[in-house]
Amino acid sequence: MSSSSPSLSPEPARNRGFVRWIFILLAMVLAITVFLIVGSCLYVRTEVSNLAKGLVPRETVVIDTRQDEVIKSIQQLSRLETAKYTVEKVIGASKTRKYIPSALLGDKILFIAHGEVVAGVDLSKISEKDIRVQGDRVELTLPQPQVFYSRLDNEKSYVYERSTGLFSKPDKDLESKVRATAEDQIRQAAVEDGLLEDAKQNAEQSIRSLMTSMGYSQVQISWKE
Image (cartoon, rainbow, N blue to C red; front, side, top):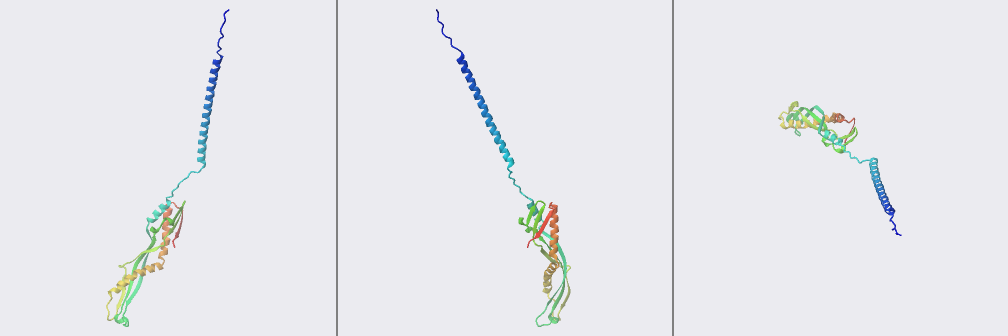
């Protein structure tokens, strides 16, 4: 009788290969799952960040240059002459000696002074605190009007009458003093006649027209004390 050796079964080798493929498949599934989870987290984080940016107001810096434009436009006008008065005034002057009658040593003069007085507003004094701009509204605080100059017209001014005493001659300095006084007199006469008030009203009209041309529909003007 011949004895036969037992043959080895291929089952264990096939089982090991199957298990290996199972592990590989599980590893791939796990890797894909982790990738999807991480990707989803990054996507959600990005969307939340974008949403938060949309909900939170962005910081906006606005520089309003209109006030500087108003200041520059007004200051360019500098000394805004808004009123001019022509004044004629009669001024009398005399020179006498103490205890001596003017009929003997006196000197009298009657002078017709003719001149002009100009007033307005010095807009170079305007500063940022004097101007407020809000939309189409502008508020301005202007300096008070002032007399810019008074001038005696020597061609139109003249001595109307001159009389001296029996023993005196015309004093050369008397007419010079009268002319010097005449300039102050016509200046005072113009102010008393309403020169500065006219200058204020005309200045308001000029400034309102300027602001309107710059696009401001509401213009409020006040005056410094």
